[in-house]
Length: 164
Image (cartoon, rainbow, N blue to C red; front, side):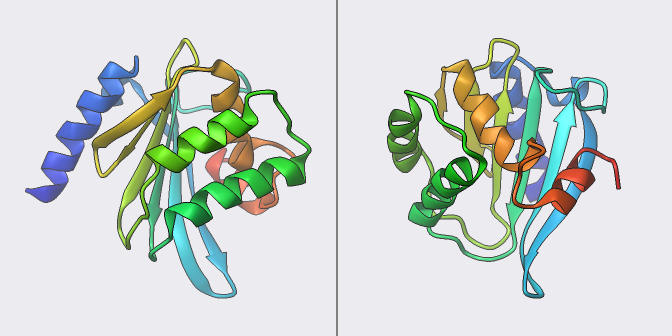
């Protein structure tokens, strides 16, 4: 029953963000591990099950396999942007907004990002809407953490893009 309710809530959220779950197909999936400890499982979805840079809508689901503090989620976002050399005039505002939007996640929580056709980025956790960032540059930067050729985890990128 719980999974059915989660599916229904995800359909509602994705419909509001411009793409229904029924129209999105999984591109790939990957697990992030740190020294044998699983951190999260991730899944990328697109309209046709393929990924092409700039293609929208996209959905990224991250199911956490351990507890992660909200502050660490935001710090990791910032450090990945810095590591990739990504900069934008709105980055500090985005990080401040993420600090307000993102909760600490617990084991088995699913954090979802849906970037709609207009580039608006809507976040949810376990199907509960958290809020959105309407700047289309944000979605590109946020997804670059996983999808950029410059990602710190190229093996994860390969799996998410269905190339492994």
